[in-house]
Image (tube, rainbow, N blue to C red):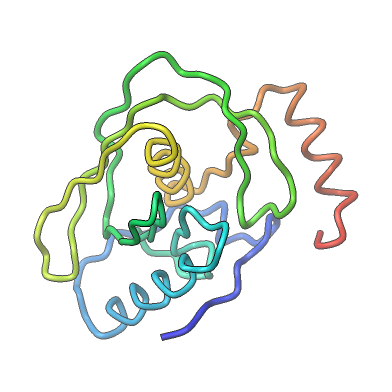
Length: 163
């Protein structure tokens, strides 16, 4: 169990679609422990496996005091009129931009025992589900910005101390 370092924008693992988990073994169990440890730090609503350098479909979440994980999640439903909401990302530190997100989302996946689980919610949970599932598809929230907003964000990235 360990808090893992977050990969930053520019790391190829963040732009690559993650592979489905075919076998739940000690490596996957260790990955889940690391994801849970990593998301527990203050200010973190979610951490996807690619953000810690692992190209597998898994993420952890920390929303409203509830911490958990999901393996092989698929976003199966979003609803409500999309609205611009302030969003940031651990892989793009210290940047916040309004991102178009649906107010409700539902994802289906499995737990470490192979049982189907469903995560759903509104507000921050809906935003986290959409954001983390995007990570697993190789999409960063910057990719969802309007062209004008993306130009601003990319300038901020280039001027950041971490890039």
